[in-house]
Amino acid sequence: MPQVSARFPAELVEEIDRAASRLDRTRPEVIRQAVEYYFDDFEDLQLGLERLHDPSDPILDWEDVRRELLDQDQG
Image 1 (cartoon, rainbow, N blue to C red):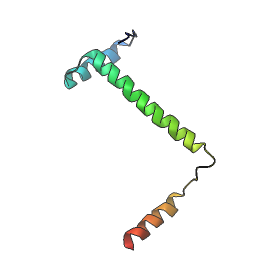
Image 2 (image 1 turned 60 degrees about the horizontal axis):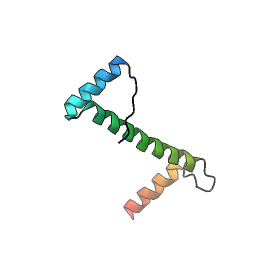
Image 3 (image 1 turned 90 degrees about the vertical axis):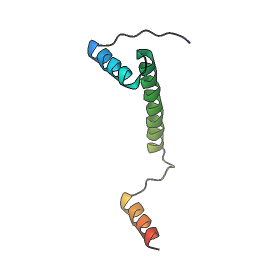
Image 4 (image 1 turned 60 degrees about the vertical axis):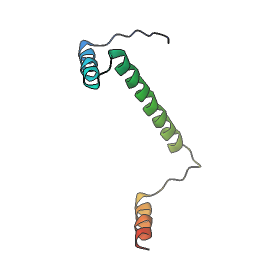
Protein backbone atom coordinates (compact mmCIF):
# COMPACT_ATOMS: atom_id res chain seq x y z
CA MET A 1 0.00 0.00 0.00
CA PRO A 2 1.49 3.40 -0.92
CA GLN A 3 2.35 5.75 1.92
CA VAL A 4 1.34 9.42 1.99
CA SER A 5 2.66 12.11 4.31
CA ALA A 6 0.70 15.14 5.43
CA ARG A 7 1.09 17.90 7.98
CA PHE A 8 -1.78 18.69 10.33
CA PRO A 9 -2.22 21.38 12.99
CA ALA A 10 -1.49 20.10 16.50
CA GLU A 11 -5.15 20.53 17.51
CA LEU A 12 -6.29 18.27 14.67
CA VAL A 13 -3.73 15.61 15.56
CA GLU A 14 -5.01 15.69 19.14
CA GLU A 15 -8.57 15.19 17.86
CA ILE A 16 -7.44 12.33 15.64
CA ASP A 17 -5.65 10.71 18.58
CA ARG A 18 -8.71 11.07 20.83
CA ALA A 19 -10.91 9.48 18.15
CA ALA A 20 -8.37 6.70 17.63
CA SER A 21 -8.34 5.99 21.36
CA ARG A 22 -12.15 5.94 21.62
CA LEU A 23 -12.44 3.72 18.54
CA ASP A 24 -9.55 1.47 19.54
CA ARG A 25 -7.86 2.23 16.21
CA THR A 26 -4.50 3.57 15.16
CA ARG A 27 -3.99 7.13 13.98
CA PRO A 28 -3.44 5.99 10.35
CA GLU A 29 -6.64 3.92 10.46
CA VAL A 30 -8.68 6.91 11.63
CA ILE A 31 -7.15 9.18 8.99
CA ARG A 32 -7.68 6.61 6.23
CA GLN A 33 -11.31 6.07 7.23
CA ALA A 34 -11.94 9.84 7.44
CA VAL A 35 -10.54 10.32 3.94
CA GLU A 36 -12.66 7.43 2.62
CA TYR A 37 -15.79 8.94 4.19
CA TYR A 38 -14.91 12.33 2.73
CA PHE A 39 -14.66 10.95 -0.78
CA ASP A 40 -17.88 8.93 -0.38
CA ASP A 41 -19.66 12.14 0.62
CA PHE A 42 -17.89 14.10 -2.12
CA GLU A 43 -19.10 11.64 -4.77
CA ASP A 44 -22.66 11.85 -3.43
CA LEU A 45 -22.52 15.65 -3.49
CA GLN A 46 -21.13 15.65 -7.02
CA LEU A 47 -23.91 13.34 -8.18
CA GLY A 48 -26.50 15.53 -6.48
CA LEU A 49 -25.13 18.64 -8.15
CA GLU A 50 -25.10 16.92 -11.54
CA ARG A 51 -28.73 15.91 -11.09
CA LEU A 52 -29.64 19.37 -9.87
CA HIS A 53 -28.23 20.86 -13.06
CA ASP A 54 -29.74 18.19 -15.35
CA PRO A 55 -32.53 19.88 -17.33
CA SER A 56 -34.15 16.53 -18.14
CA ASP A 57 -34.57 15.68 -14.43
CA PRO A 58 -37.94 17.06 -13.28
CA ILE A 59 -38.09 19.40 -10.31
CA LEU A 60 -40.72 18.34 -7.81
CA ASP A 61 -42.71 20.78 -5.71
CA TRP A 62 -42.63 19.71 -2.06
CA GLU A 63 -46.26 20.64 -1.45
CA ASP A 64 -47.42 18.55 -4.43
CA VAL A 65 -45.36 15.57 -3.29
CA ARG A 66 -46.59 15.92 0.30
CA ARG A 67 -50.22 16.16 -0.81
CA GLU A 68 -49.81 13.10 -3.04
CA LEU A 69 -48.20 11.07 -0.27
CA LEU A 70 -50.88 12.03 2.25
CA ASP A 71 -53.61 11.12 -0.26
CA GLN A 72 -52.02 7.67 -0.71
CA ASP A 73 -52.01 7.07 3.05
CA GLN A 74 -55.71 7.86 3.30
CA GLY A 75 -56.76 5.86 0.25
